[in-house]
Length: 257
Length: 304
Image (cartoon, rainbow over all chains, first blue to last red; front, side, top):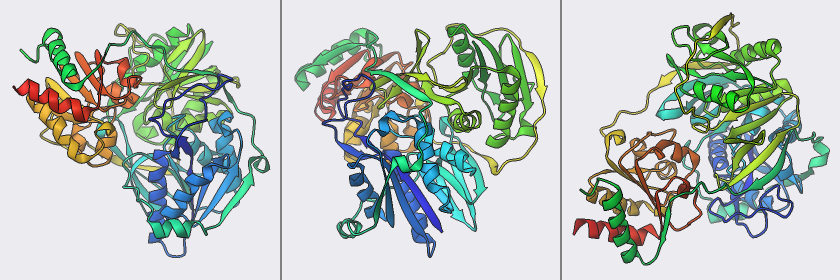
């Protein structure tokens, strides 16, 4: 069984973000980078299937500058067999459609039985790329999965809906699935597996070789949200703060009556 | 400008997002038509043309059939924008439409400013102003961003559509949320733990504060995903929507999915080390502090 998992390297969302000099993206300097959280679930699910099915092979794909290889090494250490790095110095200027096209153009003639992606990336949060890859390849796609199993050429899964309800869905292979948070418990790579990952194949393909199209969506500008008044901000020593808060709760709410 | 609004219907009910769609069309001053794959028994309050396909025929969850019905109506109506809610239904369908239409897709619009669409980035810490470069674009709206100030009224002119069943995805029914004895929606005080609690043991200090305030404890999604708290404690879009008299958010940065579940609380106190955290947008008071220090002191003083 041939498996592909697509991952993205994103900044840690706890970072302080600044807008870059051209005003159209966040400043990429001085940020801590990590694997997109949704993709950790995708990698874990793909690795579980890889281990369950004899003679299977799992490729991890990532688009971006050279630094994304660090994140790819984590996926390799988690259990992916090989890596494909699509080298793109300015992937942040591409839209979801252009990114999906690069992935689809890479995957088209490779005969993958199942492609895993995260539901969305943490920085863009648009939830487009996975489904677009499937549509470009003419594959069925199941999205927002919180439960997954695959046997006899069929994926059985549960989609997470609003309010805690789930929808049970299934489709035949080949297919693509997008993974929601909580789908499984992503493993931590062990030290021996981290060492082993260093020797795994990591192929680099320049993005230009995969015929990237023009972006259909342009980012005009990026900025922090305007503060809408907001509330009172209190700082100080914990004991002092606690007294102030209790005073406020007495005045503004009825819960301490 | 002309827009086509795609209403969402699930499990026998028209979802409230349909009024946000028509309010969005009004915000743009656009001419609109709506499409509902649902039933005649649950029509939206909407003045205008409503294309209606029967959900029994089209399938409760069948992206291929729903996509084709929408494409057929687009061919008739020739809209510049196709608008869906940014929900598990909308974000699943929208990219399928965008690829079929060679259209740009704009996800989770929160605002329209001088005719341009604004979407969030980096967990709502940033906003992106974007511009589609295509003649038609597909847009999804953040839940709650375009809630009309008044209940909409009106009755639609219905045009019925026939669906041709096909598709490669099978829908096998719903699984209801687990029943539990915790009903956060009835609690007057909720103290919620976020990622900022750092480790599961710290949930105890959150529970203790909840107890001192006579309330229940809740949790944000990361805490539930890490299995530090049960799903029945989860506040947010995929958990419970609550509006207690007092909501205390401890170590919760304020992802939109969480805010949507608690922003109607009467009074919101946030405790966070980051004074720029998005939770500050909805909080009445933001105490900039480490919850591990502040919460136990607060509990002690309240219990004294």
